[in-house]
Length: 138
Image 1 (cartoon, rainbow, N blue to C red):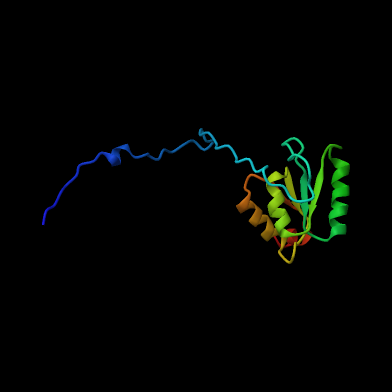
Image 2: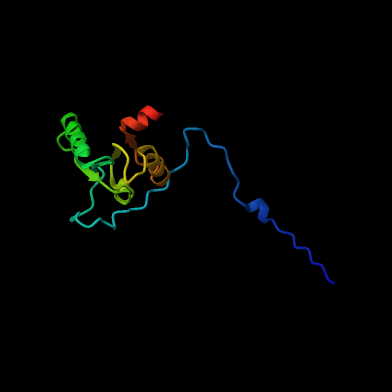
């Protein structure tokens, strides 16, 4: 039986881990452009970052409408709102939204659970929960 030993410097050339300051001095990767896909019923070019809508989800349709009415009074007139009545709509529209506001359970899923789901899938999107039941439980 023959044994061969090969000398290599591969370990010396391998990338090394470095500890960076908490503020981070690394360049972030640019986000992939997700504007290639659009939901049916939303014709036209994708929304630009300045015109991103605020997505309101959860609760009953009448409750969402009253929240939109209240928010519209305190926000600039150019602010646009969208509503989602299903979990898949929230997950699909969240990346194109400036903010996601949850106003209650959606399809039997509590607002807090949906908030965590959005945080894991779309960590760059701010999510606010205004559900009284989940606030009282927390």
